[in-house]
Length: 481
Image (spheres, helix red, strand yellow):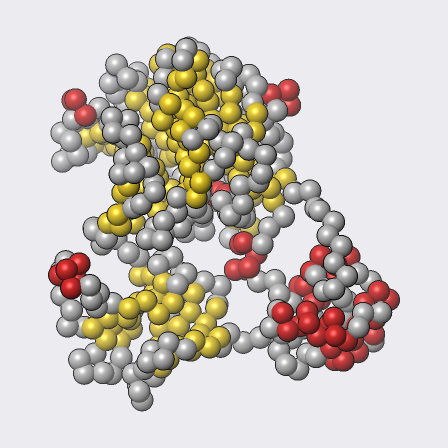
């Protein structure tokens, strides 16, 4: 945005390459502060990651175009216009499945830019979120020509397992500091844990029939109990199935694998933050310890980093959690407050009032005035996405709904939205379940027993009076996937 001249630019189509991501229709411009809009091209861009305006020339801007999500197409990469969007030139192109996802200007020189490219393709049956096209690029002539920075010599990840990259830049003294967070899909180094007391998934993955049959019934039973196997599978039954060759020991691990658990149980390295103090020629990972719980398996949904332009040692990484570092990424503090939803996608730093942050996440908007130590949750405007709505037979009846990543809720039909509950402390709606709230059915005999669930078919019977919740998802047989 150019606030002095009331000029706004919007690049449409979300950058997060989820199953539910919506495509856009290109670039739009408003010259009256957003009252009216004019289309300005790039119709096949579909997904735009970043729009950068030149700091002094409102006719010049650069756009990071991701391109189609489900198909290959050539309209992707970095585009530049010098006439306010009347014409566009593609200045950085890698290949038909690699687009640009982020851009940042050097704070000291508007002719020096850095771009992040990302190779990704989604199909109905599969998603490829990494590739050799993913990388960091630099231009010193206003975005006309580009040089790749993430070479093997640079020490920044490259190759087929390099996922989405996010960029940030600031000035420290007379030097520009660059940050790049990356979804590193290389595998972690496995640490050998010798545990003679209990049976683990890792042990079972490597175990053959003979080794399993040497296990005690007590150790097998403890494993089955720990992971809540159905009662029909006791130690004797499982031992018999494996002894007869009807199952392999690995089946005891595969039985526990489902789409929801697979989101969070990962062998990927995941989130990493790298820093460069020499214009991107060399990079160093800022942290010794892994950044746990930041990306899990879906770094394609995140990979954003922010830093204070005049104090780049103050850096923030947003992903599943939001974390803050005050020493350039060496040490981190989790600032995901109790009233802050997980899954973060936007963070605005007020450069004129330190500590003032505005965070956008899957639960809405949160504002902090003390650098994330505490937050205010902003429930307006109401932008929740409902997957399903149901009613019961009570008089007056109650309304139920499953919402995108905000759970399942119930409230009285007579309620009219107001802010009075802020004063009374009595919010009329009640959360029944978390996660991606899905279908809801209410037993009409008591208007109290609710059947509902969250993503990937996880369903429950909920007693509203007692709060008791019982899983009712049908269990498959051991050996089935």
